[in-house]
Length: 101
Length: 179
Picture 1 (cartoon, rainbow over the protein chains, first blue to last red):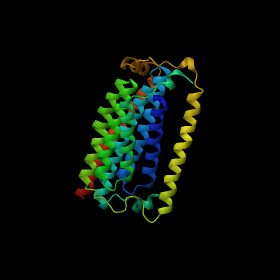
Picture 2 (spheres, rainbow over the protein chains, first blue to last red):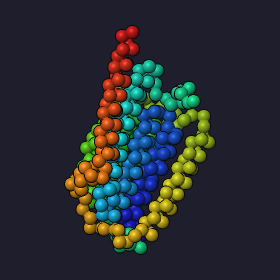
Picture 3 (cartoon, rainbow over the protein chains, first blue to last red):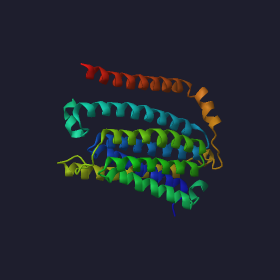
Picture 4 (tube, rainbow over the protein chains, first blue to last red):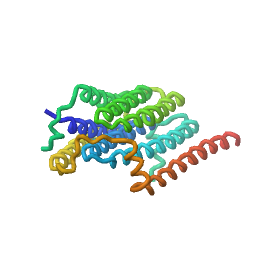
């Protein structure tokens, strides 16, 4: 039988992997960004579970920084998406191949 | 094995874990961006429930306030504003092999991470493990004014830069329309 700590770590790993696959395979730019949010969520879950096991506030402090960076990233990326949509009328990722170096 | 790792999960933990995994799969497999955004919100709420069940009430509230309350609502707002229609091709087209191999690589990544975590937790130092720990906001604040002081200031600068960037992006769009 699986223990609670292991179950939560398992959920975190599944969230991270599903987020990775979402980010790599989705066609829509907004949904690809949702994949990044899923990955960050899995990381937060591991941080909190580890901090709880070790009995100190390190995990929670690091998680606050992750939340902060995620908020800044989402705000900027979504405003860039709005501008791209106004310019081109779509947010399909394979149409932006010209941006690769 | 440590004592912590023999405690069986309660019914609510199973429920929240099941909801989180199921809704994250909906984010991946749904063709409609609105459904994806709502499912993302549900995933964030389920993980907030997991934080509460771990015993970290402060972080659970932060998750609901900031993630589910601000970031997920921002996603739903953008999806509705831009009128992103559901597409028949939900994944990158013309590359079935790419999508399939990415899914396979995601599975391999999950197995690898699981193996690392299992090893680390099985051989963890028992003396360092404190199952009766209760996290409070005061402990985080003490970290922020002592150990993570520089990182805290840098994070404030990052948020300031993000605000400025968002303003500049909005203004540049206005200027482009006038011309």
